[in-house]
Amino acid sequence: MGSLRLSAWAAASSSAARGFPPDWRGRGRRSRCAQASPPSAAPPPSLGATSRLRVGTEHGWQWDCRGGGLGGGGGRRDYAKEMEAAVRIVQVACTLCQRVQDSLLLADSGSGSGGVHSKLDRSPVTVADWGVQATVSWLLSDCFRDENVSIVAEEDDKTLSSSDGTALLESVVSAVNGCLVEAPKYGLRSPEKDLRAHDVLQAIRKCSSTGGPKGRFWVLDPVDGTLGFVRGDQYAIALALIEDGEVVLGVLGCPNYPMKKEWLHYHQRYFRLMSKVAPPTSGSWNKGCVMYAHKGCGQAWMQPLVHDFGMLNWHNSREIQVSSVSDPVSATFCEPVEKANSSHSFTAGLAHSVGLRNRPLRVYSMVKYAAIARGDAEIFMKFARSGYKEKIWDHAAGVVIIQEAGGVVTDAGGRPLDFSRGVYLEGLDRGIIACSGALLHQRILGAVDASWNSSTL
Image (cartoon, rainbow, N blue to C red; front, side, top):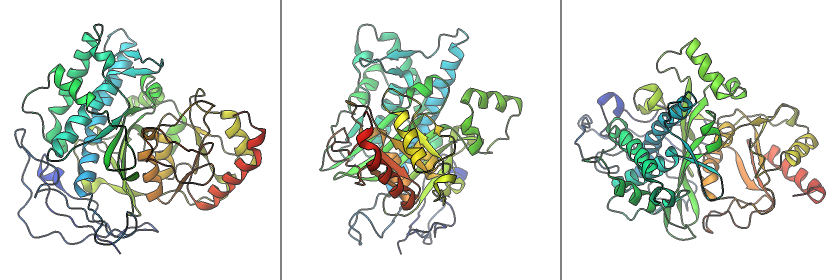
């Protein structure tokens, strides 16, 4: 059995500086993590606005999840500071996104705030995409300043650096500084002074790694599901760490993912309206969460958003597990909302052939991975149309979270997804299949083989 070693952590306040859930011995069927007694030390100091805390210092959480995976044994490296930093940073990013999304929805009434723009491929992009990328880049570099931080991310700075991008760049800089000034609330350090436009552009440009089979790099999708984001619906912030081609940890921020499964069947704007009619009490987990997992721990976790809950308190985290449903008749499958890059007709045929009868859960972004990891659905199938190539930032974080929550993710040939070949999932066999368990997974694989030759993909 592995162990989890916790020590003092300097955070925004003593109440926000508490540790992971008190029972880390695991309620999951595959748990390898256990909580060891923290060392006798002075109470964790408060983190003021001028404190220069760095994750992984002598005040940092020490997470020692030994056991299976990543080579096993005591020689495997400890990713304590990486996991802690990633969760806290994604929490900051969620706050930025919530503010920008609110401004976009207000823009419908003529405020003019926010704004949706188009990239060269005509896909939408917003202040949040660039703002999150700059914020995550700056915070990762600050947390690990003694290390060479390499980041693979979706956005570049071409639009912001153009002669027509001045006003847009100003909006991005304002959004970034508005969140970074609050970083101490999340147990992170704020810049000593506001970032300038040049600093923000540099942070975005730093996310230019191309990945590969060797070394370590972070993978970021600043706003996965931008269409859902601009429509006031589901989206995710996805951050993962890859080392030597293997995903070692993943964090998914899902700011609009409601805590009750039934709300997933309603448009997010309706959920917002109902929340205003009957406002939930503060800290009631009404919506919004961050999920995270570390490869080899055999557990995945979820915590409420600091933006909604008021503080980052690790005792508010709780373990998540995939569904125990194995009968296709009772299973629910997820598929993308967008039809441009996936075939709804093929997945509908597969669903019918294996006996799935429940209405599909169509949600934007990697929220589909979150739904399976938390047990709200059992199957996710994506079969891209000819010519479309899957990108690693669209899957890395979600894959490790499902796996550690007890699920299975492979391509349609039953092989693990390969994150070692650059920014694309090269060598992908037809499509991606994620399931809550092995029995459902095998049935889907068999159905794909039986019907593939008759498809038009």
